[in-house]
Length: 336
Image (cartoon, rainbow, N blue to C red; front, side, top):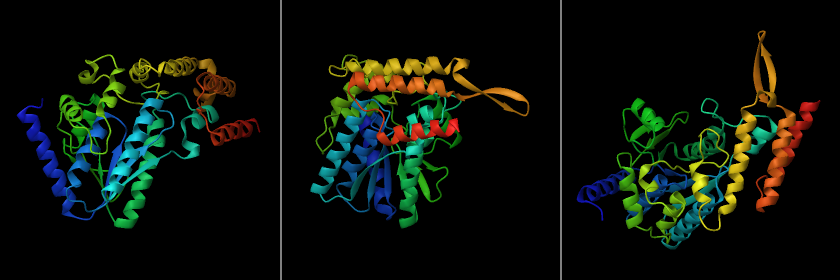
């Protein structure tokens, strides 16, 4: 049961959201990732504005094409149900699934061009797979309306990196959207704790018919309650080699019916192994100084072959025909 303090915080967030929503006609965008914080942000905003519908709200989900299937399935179901609910209730809510450009997809860049599996110091993936598609959509809105407000489910104490970023901005719920003129970011749940978020979600199923206990299952693997509040699990791509251990996919593989996700972890381990061996990379030279460059062609072909084996083993397509063609085109051009 929620404490009076938590209830007051939630009610204040609702009041702030409604006042801001009714203040002008600037469209709102909610960046939805499928995780707990963005889920709460979408839910509390839509529940609040449903009482006094006015201007457009766009809910954007950037499908990286390399997130764990249970996460993608849940996100798609979430958006589909919102779309149906909004239509039934005549609400100005639009949902949109965005994708990276073909040339920017993870496997085209790694297998086709030889980009190293990402590291903390060379994290080339997030900008291409998530940020660019969302920025493009927002810029199109700004062309039409002149400005835009982007709502994010960011919170204090969510992570050390996030706290450092927020510290630079003065811990404000409002901040500029870097690189997008005319867009401002608003973080309505910034001051909530992880306990507050889960309390809200598990005590309030959304009006469009989803059961938030399914989201809890995705976080816990269906068998651990402590991980809800320890903050140790975050949704991410199954190919992520920035983290030392993929707790997300490991947990999901514990859910009955999703045990085959263990196969994805094996491929990720292969990516790590390949990345850490100099013989798998091309030597480059700049101003007389030699340095290790991208993955060599032999290594890329090996990783490609293993990925095709993985597809056959799990019965799922991980590469589109268009991606395969572009990968092979890069290989052919490299031989010339």
